[in-house]
Amino acid sequence: MIKINLVREGRAVRGTGVVAGPAVAAGPSSANNGLMIGGVILGILIAGGWWYTQKRTLAQRQESIAQKQVEATRLEKIIKDVADFQKQKDSLQKRIDLINQLKQNQRGPVLLMDRVSQDLPDLVWLDKMVVGGEVVTIDGRGLNPNAIANFVENVKNDPLFEEPDLGHVTQVSAAPLVYSYTMKFHFTYVPKGEAGTAGAATGTSTTGTSATAISGTATGTATAPSAVKR
Image (tube, rainbow, N blue to C red; front, side, top):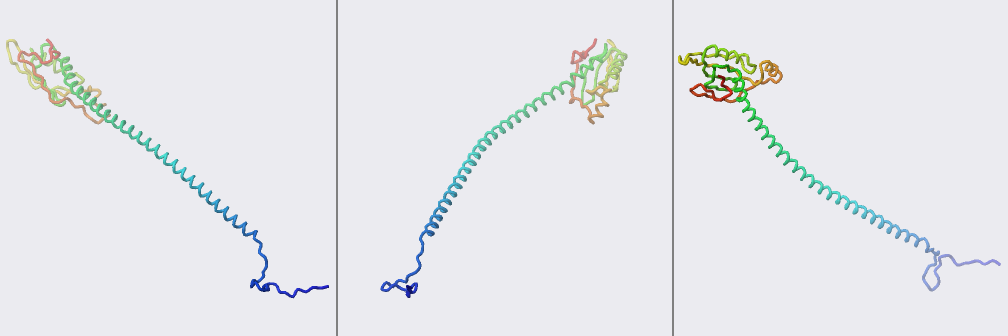
């Protein structure tokens, strides 16, 4: 026996006003909502991890900056100490240079008097010796012209003196017989044989001391005892 359903699909149920339709399953919608919630939670976790990492990195950098600032402060103190030490060193070096210069200036007259005393023969003495730059001027006396000539020759042969210029020899006393003389010559700290080599190597000339006068007494005794030979 064959049954035929004459009711159409979707026909309103009598008395309800609701159209019948196909049934919809609820399973897939719940799964989508779960995935969405899981994605949000995962995003929050990732953002929180990133924030924590950045915060930790920032803290490490701040700590590194603080350490470097402490190191910079320490180095600034060391630099200041080094600068103070350099100033003290420069000041001390200036004092040493000044002392050496004073010694050099004192060495000139002493060396000059020593060489003149070595060249001074018997029967000749000095009344006055003036040093101006490299020029030495001597006024003295002698008991005879030969002794004075020997003095001139000794100065001429001295490696630290240039050839002297004898100004005059004049008799000033008959009893006892005494002659006065004047002599001028150049003085250098470098011996004659070395002066040319040193001058060519350095291109400079050696200067003497400032103008100095050394006077004797009327009795013929020179100021420096080492310059007197009897």
